[in-house]
Image (cartoon, rainbow, N blue to C red):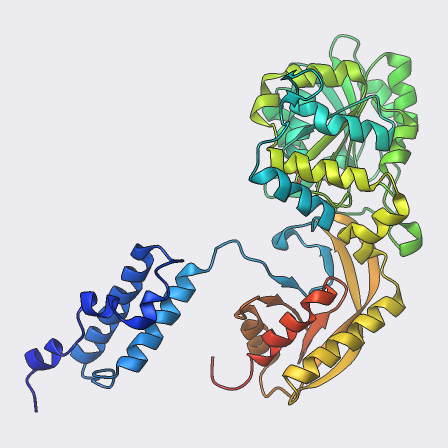
Length: 467
Ligand SMILES: *Cc1c(COP(=O)(O)O)cnc(C)c1O
């Protein structure tokens, strides 16, 4: 038997391994430091194995190089990666909320690696304002008097309150003091903005008289209504409608703010989604309305503020406007998304969020049949069937509205549903699936036609082995 020193000397040297033909292929596309790190780690592991008495890996160049190549490929994977959403939750908060339309994505591409008219007026050849970019199209689509855009609806809430109510009171119903998630709570945002929260009513009931009693000519800066987009109180309840609140505001000479959250531009009632639309809100004529860009609007993350010019002009001049301003890529995506709303029928088909929510039963059945065909081709040993499921709008929108969905079930895999789910997440393009009691479900609503082959690849790579 060789002594340990001789054995260790047979471990390849890093510099030699770096010359290996299989690694040369990576040099054009991979930082050298990444390659060196993979080689060093793999050789270190081999040394540890040998020292612990396992000499199997020694003199097996093929296996060593396989391991190094796998390690480089793993290191090259980005942290923010594309996945396929097979959960049936359209605005999945963990999976990026709204998907951009093709037109919006293309607009981002055109602007991202070129110069643009971000703050340049082409007609005059002088400095322009980035706020004009979206303001024009938002005004055109919604009919609002003025508009501005900030980073998200949380930022919109903050700047609206800071510019309209700093040091003064904002009257809000106790039934609307919502937490949106991730530490965004109306009372906390309010205090950060410098406005003073004046709670009225009870959790389940608030009446016009409650707002009226809270009104103080010296202290009241605004009445605010918050759409309780992510929960419902049912039973013995009452709240004040937006038109009634606006009427009271007019009577007292106090502006009315409406935080509506979802930004829905088309009535989706016939698809089972009972959420107020931006147009409905505008009809009630509150002074300021705010909503998210990436909920039911179906655009990029953003906070859109529309309403009376007098107030919006103040917000544009507020110091927070600079802190909360959005990037050119967001503006490009948002302008393109709003542009699509000039043709509502096309918007329903081309804005993915709306198309997914409004998909008919027949469309979903056809999708399931096509997906099963793709699956049978690449993973014929498994059995596939369709199953009726309940889908969700998600993203804290329409909590009480469920959509009838269809999923493809995968059976006879020899794996538990949990094992299968884990393996699907490890695919080249990971598939995020649903688990039923004893099998895995691929909900077809949010899977695009061009993704069927990728889903089939992911399912095919779950076969065999222990993981
Ligand atoms: C979602 C939501 C927010 C927060 O919006 P973001 O764009 O996620 O910051 C605020 N208010 C309401 C009513 C919401 O539904």
